[in-house]
Image (cartoon, rainbow, N blue to C red; front, side, top):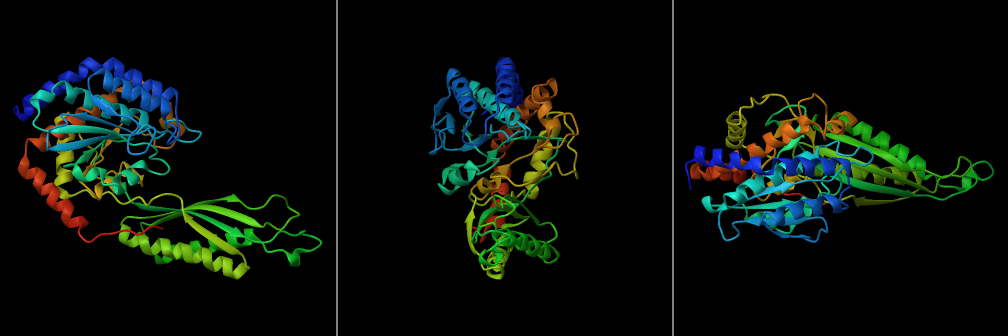
Length: 398
């Protein structure tokens, strides 16, 4: 393989060929936002672009109609995976910037494919639908899809450029209390109030907060609690999320939340059903060597990362990938201090600012791949640190 600097320079030069197509792809997705597992237009547009440029692409992929897997140098044993997201948010469009993030992944893959004969490694680009809700990466990870890779990488958009990403573990629950309807004025004593159970549940959860790890997050909302003021509610439904920095802490917290639901049912003589709203999301681990590498990649593309500033706190299925191979998930600034999941963030997704962030992110991904495959010792060190962190760690379904 060529010298690291020479190869990186040539790859970044290759980006120019696809610039107009990538910006058009991003703008198309931003103008046509699609919810998770409904990203038919986005996935089709991406796959057409990959195939048009000679990348063999499986579509659909891994049981997901809007998933795909493109392969570059498919016979190479050394392989990494670039991840692409492209789902939007309900009522807010691309307020998480997945149109831009996904476009940058596609752009990096196209450039790497242009110089595939110069590479001693292979790259897959996997389209991972539905990050915002049920997390396709969770299901793919459980199927062992990421076990074969040296590492996984993507770049997310945010208010600052940073390696400090606080992706914590998450469990989602759907909770339903069943009571008995009756006339609220003439025969309230014959009713069993499911709404009261839900109210009591939220009070119980609030009392948990003092006694769990400080960084944990508990939040939910009432989806259904009756149909009329003069009828005792016979059904109450809650969607609830529990989060904590580490899976080992969250397992106990989630069980406690479920105990609150069971206790509120007991106290109100209702019955309760508790179901997971999807697979668990795990925390993303950043090793010391991995952190230094990500900082170097920013500097190599002439961006000074905003060290010490957390670019995003939340949860993502990237953590599930990280249980199987080291995963890199830096944040690239969109040039405005807007937070993700806001209409302000969505408003810049078709702007020159977004286009610049996409280009920076594609250059970043190329730099990361070349650096790691040019330094076997660093690759092994990161793998070792990752393996030591994950050793003995486990999760349970909520």
